[in-house]
Image (cartoon, rainbow, N blue to C red; front, side, top):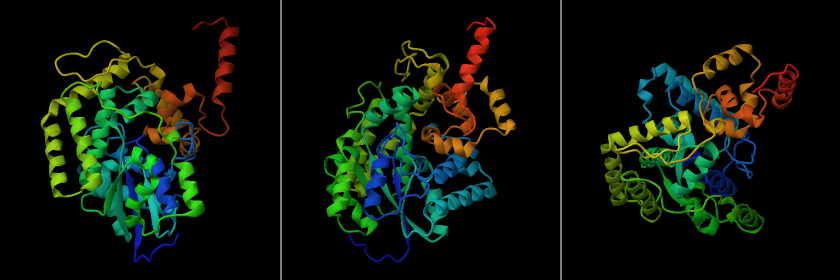
Length: 394
């Protein structure tokens, strides 16, 4: 496989909602000649074939969201204008440092972090300021499949997961209209990787892979990557269901016809969502109630979008107020190694939570360790023995 000459450094941004197949897409682009990150997050049971995203870039992106009082699981509009210019500049500097750490002086790189859907212009500006041109790939997957995956992992309601999908995809689609871009469907990529590669080749400047590379791609992109089946979002109430299906249909149109008419139709759908200002508020309210109470009762009228489900407390992302003191105590102790924890537990890096908050709410119950010298499981067993010896109860 030969590469065509390039005049400038290029970054291909892989943009799509979490759990949408962006990892598989990033790896395919790597097979097509783009450099993968040197500090890629290690494979995990949630994604046994690798995330193909940079530990440093994920951390820098997460920090940008934090200073803007947001996170990957925040479906509100992201407003970076609230940041002081110096604060935004500092965040952009950290992102560029992370890009350099991940890719060195690579001429063609593939940058994958679903968080970047929310602030594509900032990423594009940062790259351009350092002589790197940005191109984009939008990854489409059934929103219902994504919602089931998110719900299984994080315990969210279906409505909230769909709202997150809308926010990520709308922000990414709008912000990449001025870039050289293509759109890939996850299921179609698994069914026919050559057709997907053919759409990607103009971005990479490569030729269609053959021989050992082609065999490696075919072995990597098999149906086992599809953990949640496609399907319509029939469990959603109106008007959310209609908006989700309209956005999905509009994005699918871009696969074959990314023109002014298709974009105008998407804008009309986006305007419908914007006009329903109460809808997002209701979904967020019901999600908070769901997390706080683990309730399974029917949605409150008149416009609730909560999917009835009972979620174990330990699976809820985000700390509840009683954890604030514990978070501060652990942080002040100096015994929690943020970088080590995120590298050792990729799901923590992907969650967007503060590492200590993740440890308290999700990691510790799973037996994760806060640093390489502390064994959470051993500590828990010792405490249990002490309580039992003292005659203590639950």
